[in-house]
Image (cartoon, rainbow, N blue to C red; front, top):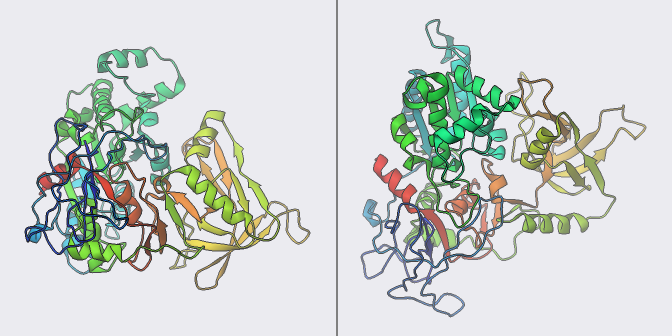
Length: 557
């Protein structure tokens, strides 16, 4: 179920949430002192909303002068799809308890690298993961989940621990998967469905046995190859676990048990789940359906995951900003935090500042508008693609880099991969870094050798970096799989919140008024590294968070 917490006015205090209902927040100091607030609890069913609207007990006018007694609850497809208005929202009657009345479901986040708590959490996860047990690695955005997971994978595959080769340390292959194409490419793996050979997974009303029988009789190579991967898998990573529906997780558990011949969780395969259930929610094919959270699946309980919550925020280092983000994540913005965030409303940001939108149509419109306003000729650079058509289509749909890259000198661009040079301590460029196109140099020019096209990009500090084409491959283990060769850039005046997942931005201009997926607004806000770099188009009326996810994290403590 989702909750949207809505703002009633600048004098009123409340909170934000989203199992798909509405809650509000404002700027007064703290609840319980004559003010009222909303929290993130309560529902009338396992996943859905009650569809009714309850007026706020003391609505105040917003800046437009109109009272807002209730807000519209909007359900949606996943962040890649358009979102539609749905049922009305119900303010939550009972705020979650916390420190001094303004805490959230998890411990207060810490900024920077100071306390040993962060290192203790990382050591605890590594010990558990290397010990072979099922693990769940989670935490706020920017706490280093991806970095820590990469460290575990490197140590497991090499046998090196803390820079030393340990002869007795377990070694082996780690299979990395994720629920969606974008997440799988970001993680350097494949989709969980493809890994398992499970195609689309069981349909509503279809039992595990019925769907397994269909797969057994399917002679397609992709299904056979997936079954073989399941049989030989030792450690399975499911990154961005929040986006995997519980029904799909349940079938993956069933499939592993059946194919491996062991009636224990995931057939005895070690499973490491990573992600944050308070960020992007499970994928839905029907926007009217309730969110099917993985942690509510019987398979989650059977796995008996040992949970590590990373609390040390690395992306941001301003204590007040980090604390405000921690409250925002669980739908709680009180007093000082609300005032802090409200101070970042900016109606006229610099044109060169990246903008985050909820819909692709907004992104395309703004990028095209900015590009057309630049003088000079436009260069149209097409990706070089080879391999099976379906695999090429997957890469085209899911890569951050477009198949058709349109540029001019002066265009604002973002790097979409990391590039490092051996022996250099600093990377040449990193994923999410912003720059401006200085020149597009093609092999058709007399001064350039054939096949050495370059785009020269000026980055912060004044350095000009020559950027060459980069090759992505559908399956690194299969030399015949599709390849996608393109400059690792994209226009950066605007992008969707969904495509910004995993990025760190120095600054951004956010329009999150239409962010109707639980956690979608938090994903946007938490991309920005500093408070000074955070800019809101308007003071939004509310955000969506999941009640079930808030309760899940509260119970972890």
